[in-house]
Image 1 (cartoon, one colour):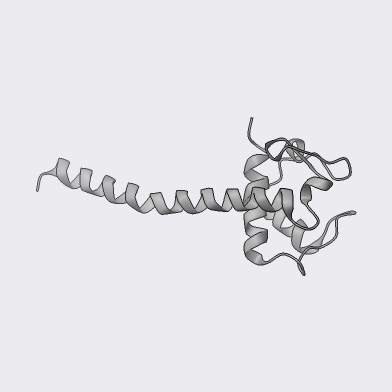
Image 2 (cartoon, rainbow, N blue to C red):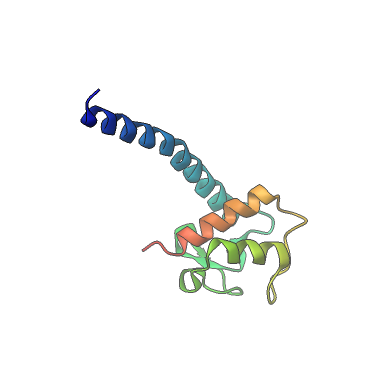
Length: 109
C-alpha cells in the first residue's frame, strides 16, 4: 500500500464515521424546532426566534440573546426569571434537542 492510499483510506474512514453524527444532529435540530413550536406550552408563545417564525413578547428575544446549549438546558430544567422549570414535562432527550436547536438557530443569519 502506498502512502497516498493509506491517507485516502484514513480520510474515507473519518468521513464515514462523521456522517452518522451529522445525521443525528440534523434529526436533533428538527426535533428541537418541532418542540419549540408545538410543545405544551410552546416556547414560541413567549420567545422570539426567527428560524421558528416565533414572535413571542414575554420572554427574551433568543436571536439577540444567543444562548449556548448549556444555558438553554439549565433554563429548561431549573427555570429562570418568570420562566418555570419544564423538568417534569420534558424528557432529557427533549431538553437536549431544544437546547441544541435554540443555541444553533439563534446564531443563524
